[in-house]
Amino acid sequence: MNNASIGQFAPFQPRDRTFFLLMLTTIWAGIFAGFVPDVFEHFQGKHVSYALVVHLHAAAYVGWLVLLTTQMTLIRVGRADLHRKLGIVGLGLVLAMAVLGPWTAFVMQDRQFGTPDSDPPFLILQLLIVVNFTLTALAGLAFRRNAATHKRLMLIATILISGAGFARWIAGPIAKVLGSGFVSFYLQMYACSDLLLIAMGVYDIMTRRRLHPAYIMAVGFGVSNQIAVAWIYNLPAWKPIATQLIGH
Image (cartoon, rainbow, N blue to C red; front, top):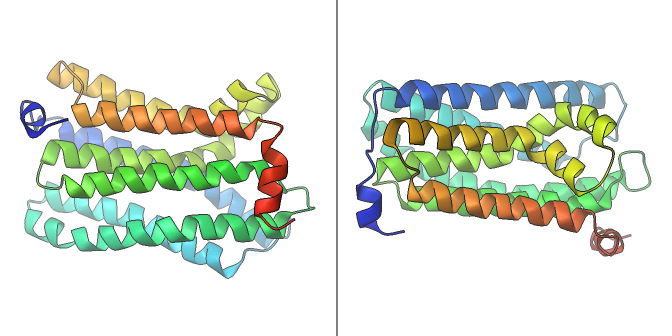
């Protein structure tokens, strides 16, 4: 991907603001639908109690969504100057999330071990999703001077972590129909977030007649990461390795 190829892509279309707002609204809805019932179940004692790092993790990830919402709003109202100044906050959150994500995974996997919630192989998703998000978000920040690239990478990074919310309410029904295995796990974890990625591509084809180079690269990397997660999760050899990694 070079600056010349990126520059040929129309940076703005009249419908962009509506489309990106709808995508963000869908992400918020998926997160709320997935995590709010989960939080209530924890407070009701149906699962092991949250460690402190979980609250820090939640604050950082919700903070990211709030920041993205704020940044989109600032662009809509013509305050690109404030949008640029808040970029440093985005960098700080990305770095914080890169640390808090794995930390939370190891702490909660340890707490859940031996309970009905225990699933050591799930550690691979918890670790690689952070890699997916962090690299894509950092690339988005690096291309902040190119609006078309920047906004696509930032939204893709957010979609990649939104699967954690969607999966909490679609995993059960999918598992009942498809059982276990690679395909079932992949769809449980990524069906909704991948549909959002597809929607982005369809939108660009409809409005620009082609896909943005950054979209192709980021989605290609992201989906490859997802495939690797689903494959490793289902490997019999992975479970004992994951169990050792969490200290058991």
